[in-house]
Image (cartoon, rainbow, N blue to C red; front, side, top):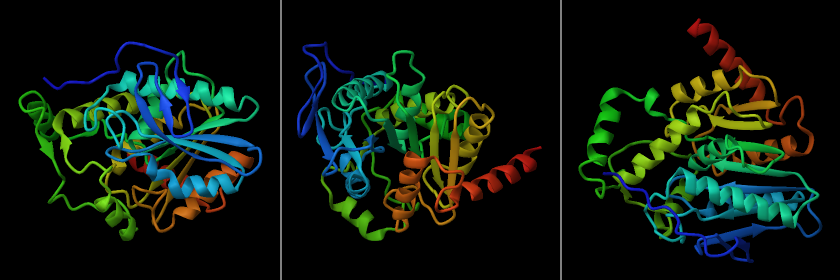
Length: 316
């Protein structure tokens, strides 16, 4: 059976130190901070993607801190230098860790708006967390190529193979060798990730199975999000396909209770925040946090409206 490896029992209250986020069960999750020289006017908590870790936010965090935004990112359980490396902690664990960190950061910065930013898997965790009744209030969420490839959008043979492997050889690891997809056009960055020992290169089947459970939950949350949202997606994303992403967006945009901005980048890949055109996305995020403009500086939201309108007309 595919396993999850959840947190232990509560031993203390969650705490923040300069380099670690200490959870209630005593796990020490490495923490990175990018703080402005003066008091911030906003705060971001950033969640990394699958097999990645908090280092993903180094350049964006530095940029935002220079623009008056305090940024925090941590290695989630099973990733980076966090405990139980390579093992899946379960949706509830990832959501609970995020909730507790939000409370701690809000205690430190009670007067400033707080935003959640999730890349890929991190975006799916943010979406899932926002459905919870006990989720602390935040001012908005930013989803960078969120992981939305749910089972309902996969071909039957793919879901069948995943189930079979997860229930027969859950310990089996996959490396991705021979899979020819391009995660980014920033080749130097990709090579650096390949050399980075904290980036996981071989993934257990049961961990992939857990990620798929998370993507199921995120995909089904399309009409449940009740928070101001900025969603970023790259037209050249080869990791999370267009079909599930556009299907999510069509349902997500069908409800209008809150502000929803979708930006699609013509030359964007999956790692939008680290692509060669990454500064463009940073500027859009900064503008959205500061002004929530009618149009983003890049115009990627205008392009998104055109694409989604034509997609909707094609479906009809």
